[in-house]
Amino acid sequence: MTDKAPHILLLGGPTASGKSARALAWAAETGGVILNADSMQLYRDVPTLTARPDAADETQAPHVLYGVLGPDQLWSTGDWVRAATPYIEAALRGEQPLCIVGGTGLYFLSLTRGLAEIPEIDDAVRLRARQTYENEGETVVRDLLRALDPDAAARIAPNDRQRLTRALEVVWQTGTALSDWQKRNVPLLPQGRYRLDILKPDRDWLYARCDLRFDLMLAQGALDEVETLVASSLQADWPILRILGLAELWAYLRGDMTLDAARDLAKQKTRNYAKRQTTFFGNQFAQR
Image: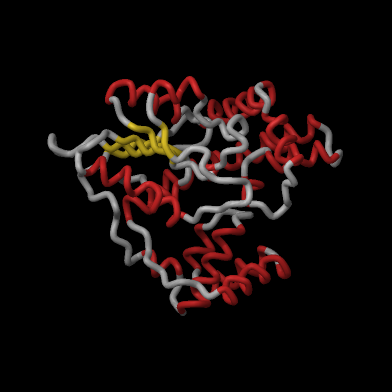
């Protein structure tokens, strides 16, 4: 980065690795803005369960794109990029330092390697992809993708219904694999205009922190947040159910499992997610 380039920091890493605290320290030094790059922290109804920065944090530095979605809303990576672009362009013009912080690796890839300009998908094609997943299951969808878009089939994490059906609908609609579309990308952030910092904590430390943080979430009112969502007619197909721990706490409230069982399962899923994030960032940004 040259002396004239604005300070743009991309701060990524697994959940519970200390990214938010690092971003606050950066903001104190630079006077910059913190921009959310975590798909779970986009939701407004569960700030405790998603470990969103609290009011005290937000008095220390401007925070943007936190808590902007309702429980039935879903942003694609493209939606996030469009929302983030005005802040990024302002930083590139030198108007403000910017820290883009989070654990959603595809957001970081979209900035550093570009986002494909894919044609609109017909409603009928989108419905066909969704119904294939609903009726045939993830295994069938993955088998289809292995034949049509093997890179996507290998890259997309287990149980990621959104991205699996997205990859399928793109190849059905366009005849070109999503992975091939993505190779045509132009990055929003040119090389030399940002600094990339990926947190890589010790695995045992990270897993212990995941467990401790979930206990703290419960102590600080995460279950109350889920109760409020349920009272407002939470639906099983709402995108907010992707948030770690939400489905398990809802199962407890329905009487389908004990609180201890819900806690243990949520912790296990959180550790698994942290492992996938660590692998993703390690593979995608190893030389960066």
